[in-house]
Length: 337
Image (tube, rainbow, N blue to C red; front, side, top):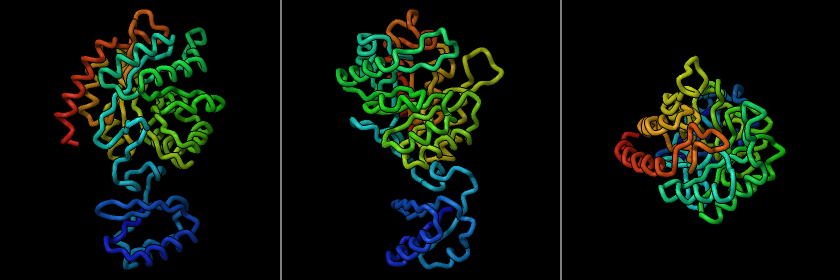
């Protein structure tokens, strides 16, 4: 339920209203904007009389939220959220963010060299896989804890925040110095993991599942936010369809749909979506035009010899060219959004 207050709402009346709502055992989140103040109610609001609320002098309007996701709902939080990563990096609301790096961390030299290259080209976050969920048990599974240590070395030497994927709740202690924890497509509905991530104060990059609907993605975000962690970044990385020309089908329509439904930042992963390095550039530019808040791109200094997903990785030189084109296009279209 959403209660929109009048601009001249009396503080004493507001405090009385909040005390009464607390007695109804609902959670209250107050959002104060430049134009209005909103009380978002989470919990069982079925027993709260809307007509009674609307009769109050300080109340302008009352709306019930029909969607099952509340905290992620734009009706609950009208303004776009900005996720503070630290190190001077913020994602969302007029800030276009480039996240780049290899699919998997392979060595100290590899990850540090790529970190320097992508940062020089404009990336503000370094990605790199330490734990790798692979379809085949015989494929490279990542360097695991050693991979996280190498990412941290790159972070310290190059001065760039890092994002890497968690696969299991037992791994969480290893992520203390990771700036953004990524939840991959296969774990999007690992609800016990999502609940645990809801109890920590760290940004979460939540990828859409291979066959997940947009509502299912938002409900997964709700699991994290319901636990108290509202630092969620949504990622569209392609969904599984009947098409086989690309690895997945990039659902760019998800960007405007999500922007309408939620206040959370939305970024695009063109690398996993297409699985083809040559497709990364056109899909990246299309994502910018669609209104995305950023891109997460796989960059490798030697794609033919990459231990993981070399076919979809672009080189540092290609990324440098793409970053320039993305910046030009974003400056041209940002006023449209």
